[in-house]
Every structure is written in structure tokens, then in C-alpha cells.
Length: 317
Ligand SMILES: NC(=O)c1ccc[n+]([C@@H]2O[C@H](COP(=O)([O-])OP(=O)(O)OC[C@H]3O[C@@H](n4cnc5c(N)ncnc54)[C@H](OP(=O)(O)O)[C@@H]3O)[C@@H](O)[C@H]2O)c1
Image (cartoon, rainbow, N blue to C red; front, side, top):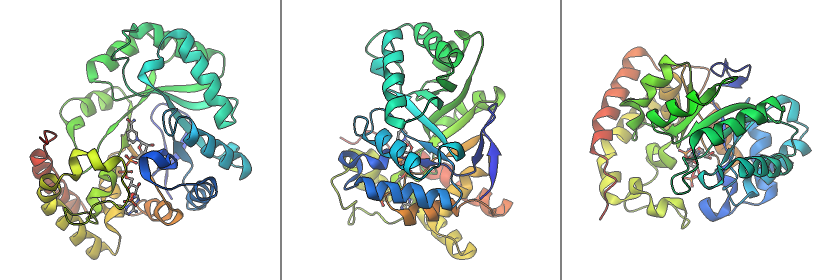
């Protein structure tokens, strides 16, 4: 495993992190605590030391499983934990209450990275009220770093302007070979400002691996049922990209998931957190680091990715 300093933090994170949304069985299908624990254990053995979760994943269940596993495995001093506060809880008092509950579920004194999961769309909370509450939590040592997720560039910039003692260090957004809207504006802003893009759905929820076709959709009635990417016309449009990923997998003797993640980590500003439903997937995803696609192959994959991503449509009816 390679390790990098995560942006302007002191965190020496494994080049590939791990997402723990998969510990929410309502979203991703069957998952019990013992299985979650073995995913964490094997991920750590494979070198992964950065874990992302959120309050809403299973209404606290993902945080509980992750915190318990890390505590029982004795890993707290060796890993970083990132979690998120949903957009509905951005009032000052709710931010404090949420973080209190999250620290308890995660069994930590301080959360390494707290992220605003999405903007306060419906509650009209002024952005500076939330940001100042987060800054206070940093001051009190209950949170180490602040990040946002799914914030458009302009709102992220406004959020930063509310802070006087600290800054936003990460922005968590969807970014993968099939979904690259962040290229248009956000990624440039983040690079200019030394903010890391934490890439969610870095495997396009499994779609980039080629294991799903209109004829063979995910086994469980999971989050992908209503995901536009898994509609037949989009899976069909994705085929040229999947073919290119598979061609490179054979050439490099890697798996399609490893090719898709290796494409992402070429850029030092991009940090993928693939979700794993099994210990095997966690180990496989860790194997995406420690080697490089050649410049030529990276560029060829990137070109097909740009062409195909343009053809994906989120309007499905
Ligand atoms: N901030 C946000 O709004 C937001 C939104 C979404 C996710 N996230 C975070 O980002 C993390 C990752 O995103 P994600 O879970 O949406 O999608 P993802 O990482 O792109 O895909 C994960 C899914 O892909 C499949 N998979 C994983 N490793 C694989 C491998 N090596 N080979 C083949 N298939 C593999 C698994 O499902 P199957 O085995 O069933 O195919 C797994 O559930 C989440 O866990 C969460 O922490 C954040």
C-alpha cells in the first residue's frame, strides 16, 4: 500500500480508503456485525487506514459497526475515521448534538474528519451558522478537520469564507469513469485551493467493473434499483468504457475494479473510498495502489471515459 498526506492535514492516509455505507443493509443488502468487522479487519491488514461513514447510513448502524469493529480490533490509534452530518441537522445546536451522538457511536474522543453530507437545502440554515459551529468543535478538540460533501463550488467557497481559524480540507463528491461532472468546475477549484476531492462511488457502484448488464442487474433490491446508471440505456452506453477497462485488466493482470481505481489515483488531489461488501472486495480494492497504468494507457482510458460519460443521462422517464 502507498500512503499520502491528505491535502493540508497531518493524516497519512492509505492511497485507497474505504467507504462503510455497505454496513447499511437496507441500502446494500445483507450485512451483520461479524461480517462488517471482518471487512474492516481485512481492509486494515491490506493497508487501508481511512474509513468513511455517515450518520444516515442505516440511521447510525454503519457508524456503530465501524466504531465497534475498530475498538474491538484495537485499531483506533492506527486509522482515520471520517463521518458526515446530514443536511437536515445543520443548525448550531443540531451540529453539536449530532457530533455528540456520532462520537458515542464511533467510540472516539475526536472525529478525524467531519463532513457536511449535503447542503441545508430545505431548512434554510445560514451557511455561517453551521461552519462556525464546526469551527467551535475543532477548537474544543472534538473534531480534527472539516470537510463538505455534494456542495457546489460557489457554496463551498461561501462556506470557507465563514471560517477564520481553520479551513475546509476535503470535498466529497461523486467521481468515477462514468460520472465526471466535477471536471467541469469543481475539481479545478479544489486543486487551486489545496482541497482534496474524496471520490464517492469510485466504482460507479460496481458498474465500471462490467459485472452488471441490462440482463444481469444487482442481486438484491438495493440502492442501485433506482440509480440512473443502472437503467438499461446507460449500462448500454457504458459498454465501450467497460470494454476498455477489461482490456487493460487483462494487459496488467489486474481486476477491472483495480484498473478503475488506479485511473483515479493518478491525480494526487483525488482520493477514492470504494465501498466493500466482503473482505475479498476490500483486499482487491487495496490492490489498486502500488503500481501505475502507463501514461499511454491512462490517456486512452481517460479518452474513452470522457466520451462515454457524456452519453450517460440522468433523465430516465
Ligand atoms: N457523500 C455522499 O453523498 C456519498 C454518496 C455515496 C457514497 N458515499 C461514500 O462512498 C463510498 C463508496 O461509494 P458507493 O458505495 O456508492 O460505490 P462504489 O464504491 O463505487 O461501489 C461499491 C459497490 O461496488 C461493488 N464492489 C466493491 N468492490 C468491488 C470489486 N473489487 N469488484 C467488483 N465489485 C466491487 C460492491 O457491490 P456488489 O458486490 O453488490 O456489486 C460495492 O457495494 C460509500 O461506502 C460511502 O462511504 C458517499
